[in-house]
Image (cartoon, rainbow, N blue to C red; front, top):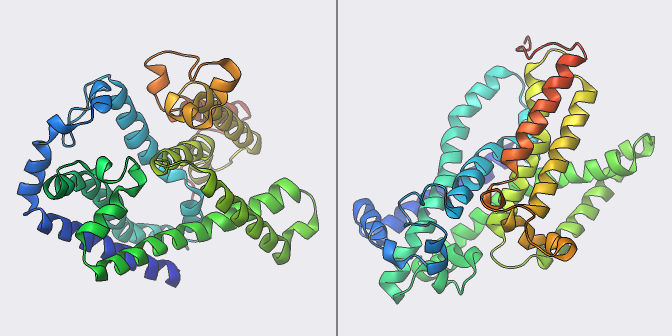
Amino acid sequence: MYTDALQGSIMFVGMTILLVATYMYLGGVNAANSALTAMSDLVPEALAAGGMTGWTSMPELGSPIWFTLVTTLVLGVGIGVLAQPQLVVRFMTAKDGRSLNRAVLVGGPFILMMTGVAFTVGALTNVYFYNAEGMIAIQAAGGNIDSVIPVFINHAMPEWFVVIFMLTLLAAAMSTLSSLFHTMGTALVCDLWGRGRECALSLRANQVGLVIMIIVSVIVAYLMPGSIIAIATTMFMGLCASAFLPIFAVAVYCKKPDPLAAQASLVVGAVAWFVYALFINTRYSNVSGLSQAVLGTPSVLGYPWNAIDPLIIALPLSALVVLILQMKRGRGMLKPQES
């Protein structure tokens, strides 16, 4: 917990400096935001054709960009963040309900800064690069969306802040990966390989599982193409929400959670998400290439289904399954648990 607090403090300070410095470089809040609004005519043709109207306005209602923004970035990330394993691990370490209530006072502003600064500064980099080099951010980053913020920091920020931002990135990575690797290692050893084996519960076995998952993760990272961070993040969060969120809700608010209902919900949510992501949603299916290889088309359904995030379909199905089985097996409706 002390390690997480230190890493969180570094991230908070780094993002605060980044936000303040960006607005200072661009002449203040009003000047920067007004300049970004005025750049709507510089939206790339491909994005404009998809419905994007600018960096400070909503896309055209019902357009592909609108569906991506609302169902993937807003709902996918906003709901999916509640079911991330590394955050649930933190939730499970809370001593009581009062501890969680106190944590909201810290966690709320922290989450606002982490996501809000990234979204705000990411858009404002267009103003900086247009003023400095006569091009928008994606052009300055060589077409790789993942490089926009690093290129902006290297160009606009002083050397001392580059060090601070590197510490911020390391703190963010370490705080997230520590929980993820422990969760993945435990799942590999205890759930997949060691089901029913007493040796799987040993510390040594879990350490081996953790090392294996670290190696696998590094290999996957090198295999991923450019401009993948946003897509990979939304895929991960959407899958976690579809598979785990209804189970977590039942576990927290139901007096007698049913194991079979939980298992069925997990399977239905995960399978529905994978099927939709691999064969219907073109943004995800293009990354995997499975639908194109097997069926000769990136999506088996047309618009707007191929632009809707899999979460919108998979999460309700997962929730319905756990609720129906929960009631059918006589476990009762959802009720708040007693302290």
